[in-house]
Length: 336
Image 1 (cartoon, rainbow, N blue to C red):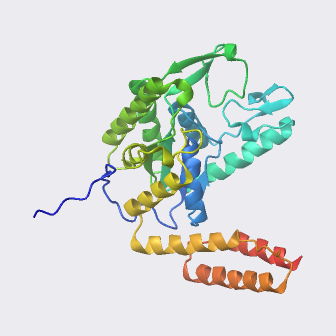
Image 2: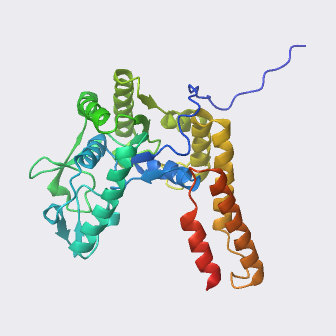
Image 3: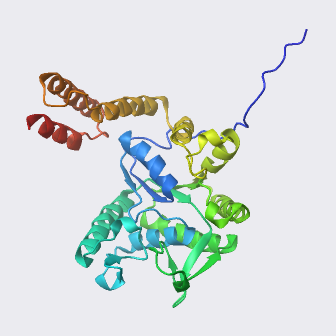
């Protein structure tokens, strides 16, 4: 009797492996939607040299392009670029996490983040760009596309959808400029799997299709140094089940994010890098461990000292992994 083939409950996405594309010691900058934050946090915990969303979460390709162009310009933000409303100072180029009741504080936070990212871009070897939506909000007063509306009245903005040609034209010129600013940098495009259901199901699909077509065209034009990772396709086809979504049924669940990070590693990590990642993630879990009986006891101090020794040993062995901050913080914690 012929053996029955096991049923398949998903459609595996084939990805061309590029082992060594992501590795410790290769500086990385991530820009884009909150999915960039998810992946960036994973890479950060795994001790990659990384800067994540220095402007805060950016959703549309134009705002991401503006941020990247500003980083290449070396031009810090000025006080006259801030806005004020409801007692808060904010920037239309930044996420609301930079907003505060003080213009000086807001500007300082913005420029501190800017300087770190500008420094990173000059030595960056991997730039990860995550497009979230093709819809943009323009200021009705001057047509400027904003990165965040900061809960301002709707009548101040006009909402439109970027076309594939608009995105490709903008990014084609920007990528050519990047080759001069950071010739060692390679770009990895992704499209966020987070569904923008406030746009409606059909409009969300049109938006994602626009982003996918634009990313594909850019990778074709710059195939020698641009690549695409199918995070969107993995969620829609391999994880096509609502158990892989958060309660809002739009954002991927923590299990889905973990799976995508695993696929990312399968695609771009060498076996050596994978071993380092697993070791660093194990240390990260230990760093966040807090015993039920508190930390003011000999048992925890022994645990902490053992962890310090472990991090020091990793630093000695792996020159591209830095635990100085974590070691100092843990020393201060157990000395209190």
